[in-house]
Image: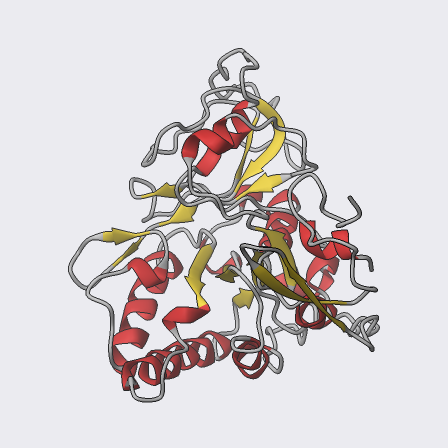
Length: 354
């Protein structure tokens, strides 16, 4: 497993750019035809095409639809947050006996790649949150669309949060509301969108990321109630996948600020609750998409191979290297699973060779 594989993601990819959303899909100045309406003749068929809808795929309904939950975390993996990830996630199982899988949207700067590798070999998904973490919309609007991406998870929806909007391909025009323009209105056949179904905070306002919900919960009970209430909005309706999108900084903080420990306790209580339900599966975003492509009812879920138990991957980062880079204006440190690159890896030089 070389450095660039960690940098761009070792399994599948997602561009979670909260301020730019789908602008990077426009292909810069390339002009595409507007996406047509979803056909009614049945020509859009799984596993390669799926129109935006609140109806569960595969003709499944009710309690035979497994409730999918994807736990996601943004930004760098470090010695500060990795212990929490290990204690919170590593020993949890889904009802079929497989380990749960979370999705980590990794940014490059300050990421400890030996710890990224540890998450990967434990069965968690490493996804792309960009190298630069640049928040300027125009920067991404000028990028081209070539990047090997097969799905994106960047568009929140309030209109279709209850019942929830299922993941869909961009072959045809989406019904999803556009909260942050520009949103794509062109066709991108076979490219999946995983909607971010808005949570509703205790003040009644929507929040795509849990740590944006207001008022910010300060007790275990308030945190658990926030998560459980929004979970039940889907679990008791059409069982569209629920994403718990957050940053570790919402749960990890100074010891003299007890609200962080309280929120962590509430988050763990919520995971315990999910683990007690026989039809709830905490899987990665890519695993969720595999299910959407090949819908399998709860009664037959043990035969669904993408969710089957898998052995832990080999540790290919036995001797991590600690790398240091500096010039007259900045200093950077990086832990890598390969010999330290000559230069600090960055955009257009992601191997650090130039």
